[in-house]
Structure formats: C-alpha cells, structure tokens
Length: 256
Image (cartoon, rainbow, N blue to C red; front, side, top):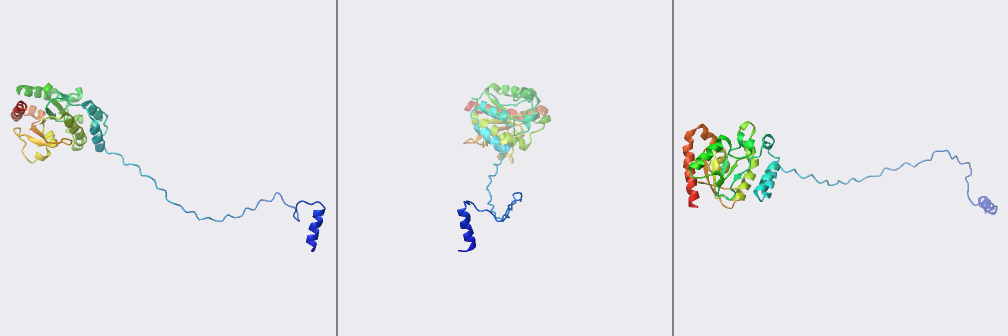
C-alpha cells in the first residue's frame, strides 16, 4: 500500500468526509471563463410578402361604377369617388336628371357655370336654348333623360381633358346600362368623339344615326350627333343642323 493511500485511509478513520486542496483557495480571484469558440450560423432568407399594388384611379372608377345597381347608388358612387381632380374644384356634382323611364338619353358637354352653381344639367342660356329646341319638336326635358359628359365643371370652364373624361367614362357607361335607353342624342363634338370614336373619320351628319358600342350593353345604340349648345349660341346658323336632327329624333320616337 503506497503512502498516499495509507494517508487517505487514516483521514477517513479520523472522520474526514470531504477533500480539500493542498493549498489555500483565493475566493476573491476572478473566475476564469473559457473562451467561447465561434459557431457558424446559417442564415436562411425569410420570405416577405410584397404589399399589394394600390388600385389606380381608373380601376377604382370601374369597380365603383360596376357596383351601382340603381341611379341613387351610382350618384353616391360618383360623390364618393376621389380619383378625379375635377371633384375638388367644382362647386356641385351634376348628375343625370329627367324621366328614368324615357327611351331617349341626351348627353351634353361638361357642365358650365350655371350647371356647377345649381347642380343641374343643361342650365343657363344653353339650357334655355335646349328647351326652346325641344319644344319646337314637340318634346320636353321632363320626358327625356339628360346628363353631362362629365359630372364636374373643369376649372375656368375649360374643356375636360382626355384623362378626366376617361376617369368619368365608366360612370357614364354604367348610367346608360341602368337606364337602357333606345337611343342617345349627343350635343357637342367632344361628346360625339367619346361615344362615337368609330365615326371620327366620317362626317357626323345630324340626319344619320350612328351605332355606339357601350361597355356593358349587349347591342349597339343608335346615336345622333348634334352641334354643341354653346356653339349654337355663338353661331345661330348651326341650329339648322340641330333642328334637322331633332326632327329625326321626333320621327324615331313616334315610330317606336
């Protein structure tokens, strides 16, 4: 038996129950922390969903107009549409008026000063001239449906831009779909170019009906293209063509 083992046995016999270091322990000595070994980390890319693209003003116009099932709903949709800057500068929304059961829809140019002030289509001198012309053909605005090409007056009475017309066009098409007229009468060159683009290279005669393809309608609608009311106030000779067109309208109504 070696001396170390004999010494250990003697300590056990004396009642030792724990082992101690041969030297004193410095309790104030900082602990030695073993240096951490670098661990290789694998970074996996996290798929982040891209935010959905915001709908354009034109897309929102199509969606809002398509949801309208009544004239009141279409008017409310127009009033809540903020995609066209004309709404911010106009005094009032100018919506369609007349007899919703009428088979004839009259579409004019953009609203003027009087229309903007009162919120009614075909007001002021242009409206007075229209009433006279209709009366001469035995017609009344109360028997028809009337609407402007765009529902807000452009600033300063300037013509509506192509972009502004394009934004408002879905609402006009939806109006036509809801009314289901048998024919349309267009006052002014801008209205004719928008509704009858296929006839731009042909002379639009007030004595000829043109077929208009309207989005949402299953069949084409016959249309008359007449001079604008503002132009007729400035050039009375142009009223002759308008009168010829109104006689054609009167005949179509009588024969229906």
